[in-house]
Length: 70
Image 1 (tube, rainbow, N blue to C red):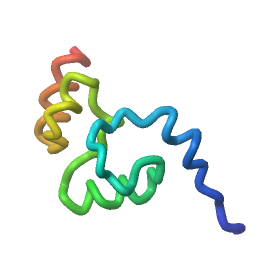
Image 2 (cartoon, one colour):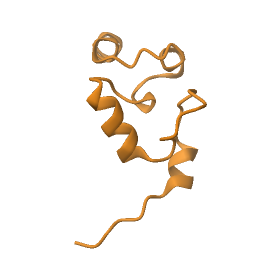
Image 3 (tube, rainbow, N blue to C red):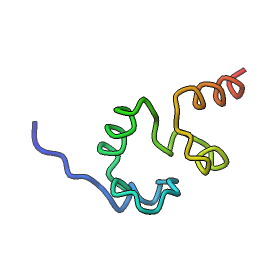
Image 4 (cartoon, rainbow, N blue to C red):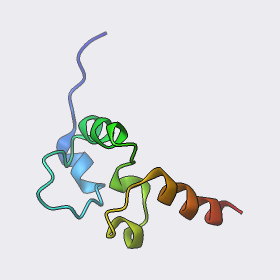
């Protein structure tokens, strides 16, 4: 299987992360790996009002989305 090329520019267009010094913006695979290692999810899994709190915990994700799915 050939090496894939990261589409940083198009990834940035859909990135809602407001943490400005983040070195992983646009590098989704690095972002996922980083957050998952901390048992978190990246900003793109959260709506803007929750993303701004920087609480990327699984608990916050489950609490929020479990209310929306009902």
